Amino acid sequence: MTNIVLFGKPGAGKGTQAEFLKEKYKLTHISTGDVFRFNLKNDTELGKQARVYMDAGDLVPDELTTKMLIDEVNKHPDTNGILFDGYPRTISQAKDLDVFLTSIGSQVAATIALEADDEILVARLLERGKTSGRIDDQDEEKIRNRYQEYNEKTAPLMDYYQEQGKFHAVNGIGSIAEITERVSSVINNL
Ligand code: B4P
Image (tube, helix red, strand yellow):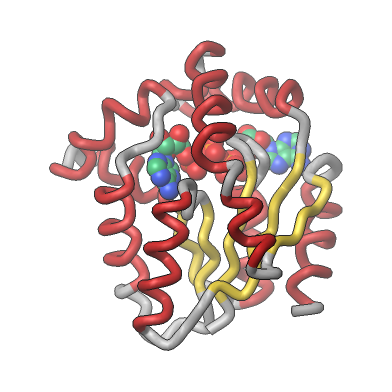
């Protein structure tokens, strides 16, 4: 299995790039944000628990998120590899992912970060908020809170993966196709 973690601030383009990369490399795409939103929409027990955090732009608690993630991975026993989009977002999640992947004889091959300036990303999210219906995209204060969550809880993962020699950063500004090329050149050299 070739497991890739797509990493970046909110709105960096993880979900956008994942749509192209999953086809190109025949990977199973798992977006924790998308799985949560599916549960919110269908008003499941998990959705009810996650809603309060997501609407405020907070991270959903690790235990809930990791359990959901493992359930999703287990739905694809014959996959070539997983494209993790939006997971892990905390050190605890990264450790849980390592333990889980080791238990199935696998590991993270690479973490690829899409780098972009906060102000550009805030503008992207506000733009998306006009049509997405996402409460967390419509209010600048909630968007800023997502960046604070990222800086406090998610940014330390860069060191975590750098220490394992698995961290790769690419410029996340440019056309969507240009960025797909940049990410592809990292994957092709693994
Ligand atoms: P996510 O769904 O992961 O949301 P995101 O960070 O906003 O999205 P992404 O980076 O994928 O941006 P996108 O491609 O869509 O998370 C939402 C919430 O779910 C979190 O706040 C949290 O509450 C919860 N959650 C999810 N995972 C969790 C976890 N592991 N632990 C705890 N809680 C978790 O791109 C954004 C916009 O930019 C789009 O409009 C796109 O069209 C545009 N865009 C993309 N690339 C572009 C480019 N190159 N140029 C111009 N625009 C571009």
